[in-house]
Image 1 (cartoon, rainbow, N blue to C red):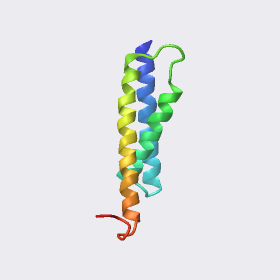
Image 2: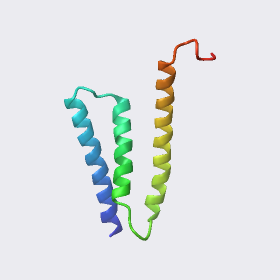
Image 3: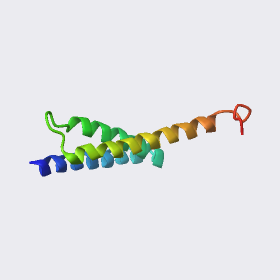
Image 4: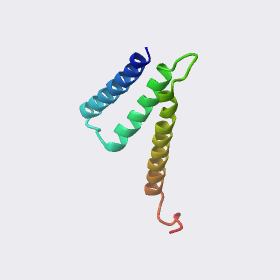
Length: 93
């Protein structure tokens, strides 16, 4: 039973990644940043949609680390974009 739920999670995540990558290719907007952000959104959505009601298996608790790393990477990308947008006079270095 647990293996079926885990495979459902993996299948959903892979389907989301392939679908968003295909849509980005069709829109001619493929970039690493967009794939990363769409993949993170998909990971969060699939994690919530496949969450068990009563008991949380160990593999789902380890997903928190992956989600945390993804959110940290997203914060770094946002900070990098903000620094690129700001005029040089505003930055202290």
